[in-house]
Length: 207
Image (tube, rainbow, N blue to C red):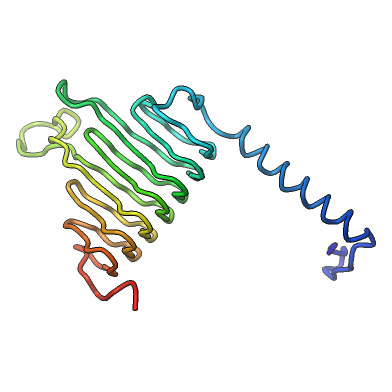
């Protein structure tokens, strides 16, 4: 279909086969452009980088500690903040196959963050396995050390709504639904819906 200047649409006069071929090449061009927009560092700089995409602009720290599966799409504004803050801990961020993150998300990893297969995360989601310590109120926040990390795991097939925050030490169970704006402070049972701050179970995600 083709849009007329007045807003009406008229049917293309091209034969159906020609239209299908044109659509095929349009799709290939979109994928090619997406590959070109994939940001530095290059895929070979990662611990693993499957057949996946990171849409520019993005910020990637310590790519050698990041392991990305196949079919992953990380949309623009993503920040993968992987930092070695402790001499005895080698950080590792793993993102499983077919996982999709929306825009302006942040994953902070000092220890271990594992995001399993088929996870869907909306925009502005934040996941972290640590935080800036604040036990000494006499020390400015910029000089506070990082707290020891606690492993975070997002189970396969789960969904994180808009603006969700997942705190250190949390496991989000498989096929769970964390609703918009929730702050997850404790483990989420598999197959449940949680909501609120702090997030609490409000129902099953499956009948």
